Length: 78
Image (cartoon, rainbow, N blue to C red; front, side, top):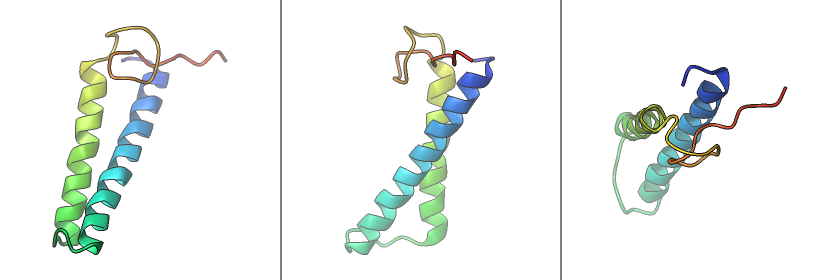
């Protein structure tokens, strides 16, 4: 959790999760499934990104190297 690789991977995961949640809510709204405003949509995406960061922190060092929840962040071999 104290490495640059951890925070780089965590930031990437949070941004990806934010975008996925944003697209999911907007897609559902576009199909008429839900009716949400931008504030609510961004709040949902932000909360999803926060959950991704907290999950990464809570599971850091939990297992072998890799990108999964039960794996630690791979260190670059630079």
